[in-house]
Length: 463
Image 1 (cartoon, helix red, strand yellow):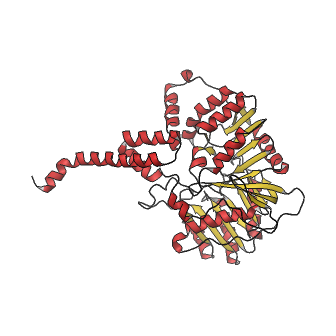
Image 2: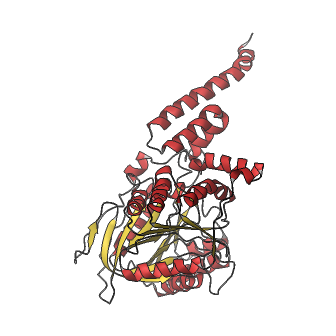
Image 3: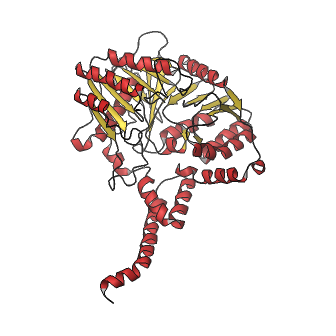
């Protein structure tokens, strides 16, 4: 038997042995990583029992905390010094006093505020977004950025490579020709992004002259904002901040930008001091980030901490709800101990698999006494946590496994009654278009739906 015939004869067996060998190596690596037990078990099952599917999926999407990313990327959870001493570190993030805020409760508010700030910028504009849609809103925003770039304003636009995939269009080239800079965060390239394709930059912020910044849950597209009211527009929340908190948000952008441009030799720029707001009702803001470039899971730990310390009430608003075991149990314990616990989610989101996966969690919460409310007036994309009328959180992070443990995220916690009251009013308005979740006995459901829910919950740790 010649060599070629021998290789052909043993190839089926060799491929099997190599597949299981690689699976064994990946399982050993998986066991060393700090993951939630449910996620570890889910990956173990997929890799071991279906190696041809599990091995490539893990190589592409399995990354969560990559030490090399942490080493190459500047630390984000830092307190930058300023003259007034209004900035300090907390156990989870960075707290600053003396800020001015302006809530953007509707897409019209958000669009007009964004365009106003772009046109008013005199020195610089920095924008990070997960999605920049190729629609009338996206094109209008890019045209406004191009005008400011031609006027001599430095414009930098950082897009997530997956969320804004395929954005090399003519109007984007117009921005580049005008002098604006466009970078993509962590492109998904064959063999160069193994283990990283799962790690997406979900942060949203727009900084103007390094003095004012817009943050929240809105991407740039007609689903999120526009010049006139649209009944099809998603409900969301964003806000403008002016004051010392802008320093932390600028540091976040600079670290992300320097990381995206690291192969071009660009380094992180120094952060300019921002004075304290001197008007009435100054706000206290805690800026927090989470993601593969942070140690631990500070955003998750902060949310869990304030929920467990709640004395009267907890309200959560999120478009997608896939909690881990500890967060789910914490909400159930609070409800059973007599505290008011509300969860507001859309009746149907834009991710059907996530909707199926959440149903068992909703049943458990409802049985424990949690008031589960379904928003039935379209899509609701806002992210809010309210505790005891003393703390309010909003930002880019959903209450799901991806936002809490995988994505690059950004959130702001407010401790002043002005912001807490405004966010509470926004939530109360949403509640007027909700109806209670009704628990359907699993035995009364169609068999196929029950199977789909069971499978969806099984893969929930991988979503």
